[in-house]
Amino acid sequence: MKRIAIIGGGVSGLFCAITLLQSENAPQVTIFEKMNRVGKKILVTGNGRCNITNENADKIERFYGENPTFPKYVLESFTPNNLIDYLAENGLILRKENDKYYPFSEQAGTVLDFLRLKCEILGANILVDKKIEKIIQRNGRFIVNNQEFDCVVIACGGKSSPHLGSDGSGYELFKSFNHTITPLLPAITQIKTENQFTKQLKGIKADANLSIFVNNKLIRRDFGQILFADYGISGPPAFQLSAIAAKNYNNNCYVSLDFMPKFSVEQVKKQIQKIIANPFTYPLKAENLLTLLLNKRLGQVIVKSCEININQDVYELSEAKIAQIAEKIKDFKLKVTGVNGFNNAQITFGGAKTDEFDSKTLQSKIVKNLYACGEILDVNGDCGGFNLQWAFSSAVAVARAINGENND
Ligand SMILES: Cc1cc2nc3c(=O)[nH]c(=O)nc-3n(C[C@H](O)[C@H](O)[C@H](O)COP(=O)(O)OP(=O)(O)OC[C@H]3O[C@@H](n4cnc5c(N)ncnc54)[C@H](O)[C@@H]3O)c2cc1C
Image (cartoon, protein in one colour):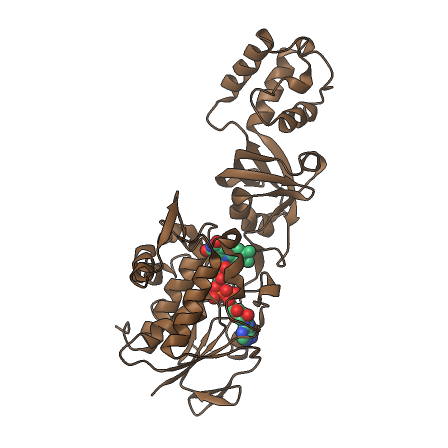
């Protein structure tokens, strides 16, 4: 019987074990996990609710890496629907919110319990408190922790949120086999910006279109809820754009917020003029000019950013000043100064270079019977269930390959 070592007991490692063990020719599987229990990161995903997948998580354009088409085969071979059906057949049903899926219980612990207990019932040998720092290759076999294996799967995750286990040590294992690690950046994290205004808005949430520009070129735009903080901005659109910010913050990089994306500048201007012509309070002061349109504090900060004294009467505002306010609502620029680091990041952008792996089996092209799955590879998805889907899909690809089920 084949003996398989899986290094890392996160989603990808656990699901790889389950898929291996559910096969007719199930091998012997040992999972080595460095923490005192498996799957710690799962518990914090989706704010404790685990956004397990997304209806668009088989769309290649929502994934990034040096070779953007690399994940295509794997994602299409085990799609979000395949995952949803598999889980449902096994009793774990999901609920859908917009395009995102969560366990019906709305508890990430449900997903962890399912994966951990399923591994146990199928007979996986789970060894915790076992950080693997060395893998020896001898006569075509591998020695891990003094035990011999036919195949090794490295599923150690990236280096983001290291307190949850993924400290980057998996990259060192790959390097010891002469694999290349592409440059690593924190991603799906908060964006640091000049903070004169964001400090004043600390704790405020506002829906906006967030666009990121590098050298005055629009790179990406995303809509959603922005959360202002001392250091800059957070919230789903900031997370989505954070890898671009991390790569380019030294490169004349700024974000622009559009707080009324469905209105043109001209329409916003007309709306402000209407408010001035029909005051809801008298005298109407600048501090209340935008109260009917936006979050009150946000409105005041926008007015202040146009160098207007918020105590002045709005009737004294020139046409040009009103136009400037409308433009600020549509294009509130903040210079990007960086991103929060790996400690706060949800994923790591970059990883084991995908050109060095077979795109169907995820087997190393350098070392036979060595595999990678999950975030350790240079495959990074958008925020919203994409990265967990990659962890599941890549786990299945590896397990099928080892079991001889997807070798063309
Ligand atoms: C706060 C937060 C929220 C998130 N929310 C979502 C979400 O809602 N939806 C989504 O799709 N994605 C989310 N993600 C991203 C997602 O959790 C990861 O992409 C996914 O868990 C990666 O799975 P993995 O198995 O590859 O790695 P990991 O989950 O990181 O697991 C790797 C495991 O390997 C172990 N390990 C590492 N090195 C060694 C070693 N040398 N020896 C032995 N064991 C080792 C680690 O302890 C860990 O248990 C979130 C991430 C964070 C941090």
